[in-house]
Image 1 (cartoon, rainbow, N blue to C red):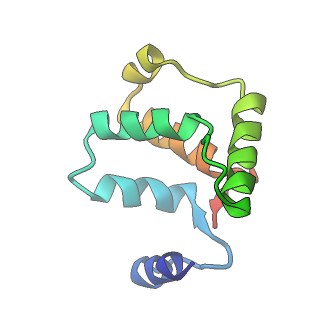
Image 2 (tube, rainbow, N blue to C red):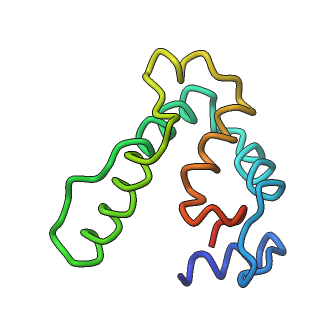
Length: 106
């Protein structure tokens, strides 16, 4: 939470409204170290439900992510992810991270 608040302050985001898609893409794209291959790896990891249930918090997050993966019609294979453009990678990442489907990350 503290890290998110710091990022909101640094990048001028409204922490209550969250990070919009139009703010997310330039943020990801601004880090020149984020290669397309790294974004592909991140996307593949985001699609995987976590198996770690060591704490109640982790368990709730894991259940939430599993629900998204189960309900999503867009679980992409590694081969499919390899074909995505940078814009498509960022769009797919945003859709996964926007678990509440509000059009904002918070």
